[in-house]
Image (cartoon, rainbow, N blue to C red; front, top):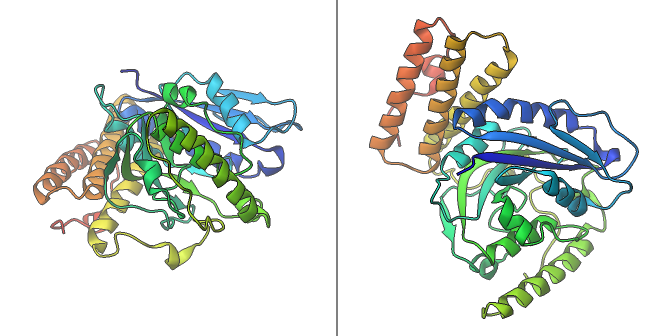
Length: 358
């Protein structure tokens, strides 16, 4: 199985102010994916003139001759991609490399899943309202039967097989909610899975599409189009028709602070440890990028630490048994011991939150 991920970014020239942060997050994600044996490429498509500075780390940058919309720009990026899997990254959001690596590491050569839903957090670190805590699976045609507003996960936090995405026509040409149409269309052709790792950091700001006054009206029109497209396909496949939510509402996922904390509050210690291990994995991955002259021994130690922390985070996220968590944390202790021998600074035991699993 080819282990390669294409990150696809569509950027409007007048909304490119946060692209530098997106670029930094992609750069930090590369070594995290290398740890689990995956390669990453970043394709950026500018949706019309004027030109923008080339973002650092972009493997390819293309500018469309005129503004065509985010769906068109994403599809253009996908046509230039070479990865076996694709992940959309909005120009104002940030990639969370450790989370992406955790998700990709669970994809095996014989895995039949065509798309994987993941979590996202706000740039400040709080969970978004679409957060889910448990792994789950969807059979072909099942996801649309549970269509709700807000959706069961955020449809722009999905990693999908590139061939499946292409076969389904990519992102439909809608003014808004093209991401929802994308994943629902793929769900009619291939089974999917939900992995609770956070793969994206979502930014709330005045310039985003969901902040526009007309968004609720555009959303209802997009839902109507998605419903008709899905039912045409379901009829062809002999499946019963589905209905869009009676009240699509406005934008979901744009609150911040304590109101965004949802699932997982019943087990704070487990949740805190999951997020700490996630952050630690990211920190070690970023340390590799920040030290290009690092010798091979130290680089190997940092990669082992990032991998061990990532596996611990995954164990807590998936609510593994205490025995399995102990096994993963034992591997982490061995990596920490190697780091100490190599004279590499590591977090204290108090900071790691060591102790019995909940």
